Length: 294
Image (cartoon, rainbow, N blue to C red; front, side, top):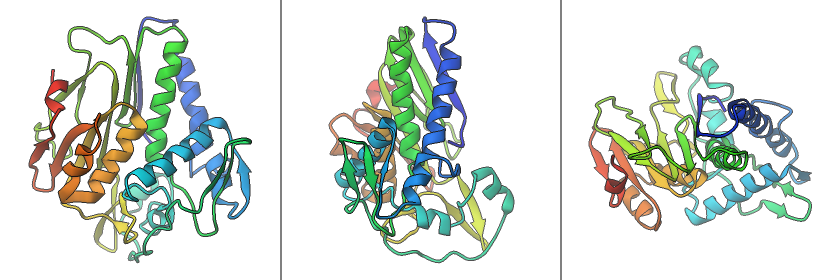
């Protein structure tokens, strides 16, 4: 998943850390677009043909399609060709080392999820011709949801799983405030502060962490599905607090792409709140975030 992972537990058997690492590695094997043997690559390489996948992959694709619908296409997992065209076509460390490259051309609007067929009986997914999926962001969130639940099933009293900023808390939490975490601070001004979470999820989308240059132009991995180009929304980052990590992740992306009206996108979600960091460094806290301040 191209990121650091932190797993914290309250109580439970001593092997929970090792078992969590094995589980996350297994999910990476299923969902990585950089591993030719992954189920995601099998899907992307089989246009028009049903591919039977694991229950985890089927559920993740179903969540991605649902997110596409509920965000009116602002979150769109079918932007893979645009991500590759922008230069993110290999592991990000290699992209960052490569430096400036060829100019980038817009791929146009992404195809969307309307033509994807799901067969829940056999866990088969059929992608139409011309549709490929990038499940990196939502995959990290969903992995945090899965692993945190399994930690409680295996005896932990409480758990916090953080996959590169997609964070999920379940069960008991430390006293007095719960799990206290630092909010992603893309401008490094300290203005974003801390959040305290007992249960639920936090996710951040930012254009500054996975950024590179092509032909002297600053680019990043957050693609506007309407144009096929890295989005320029006036925002540096969006952090969302929600009930599940996969939902927090897709809401953060949808709000980031929306830009000026990002607060309205999150206000429509009854259990979500967060904060916006604008390109000029200004921080906008949304209603409801104060209850998560320690």
